[in-house]
Image 1 (cartoon, one colour):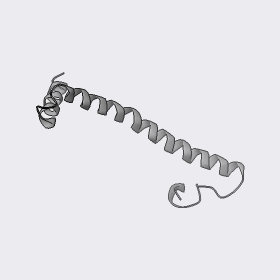
Image 2 (cartoon, helix red, strand yellow):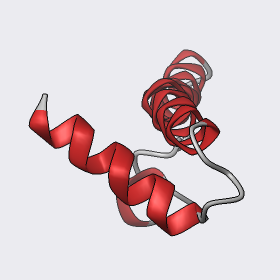
Image 3 (spheres, one colour):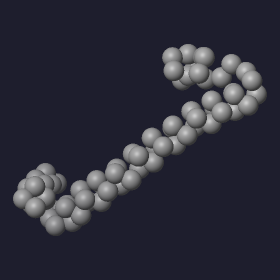
Length: 73
C-alpha cells in the first residue's frame, strides 16, 4: 500500500495543485487502459501473423515464413 500512496503523492505533485485529487484518478485510469490495450494489441499482431501463415499454407504458396526476417515483410 505504501507504493500506491507514494505514487499518488508523486502524481499529485507532478500535475500540480490545480489538479488535486483527480490526479490520482487520472494516473490510475491511464495505467488501467495501458494494462488492457497493450496485451490486446500484441494479441491482434500475433493473430494477424498466424492468419497470414495459415492462409499461405492453405494456398500452398510462399508465405510469411519464407519472406523477410521472421515473416514480417
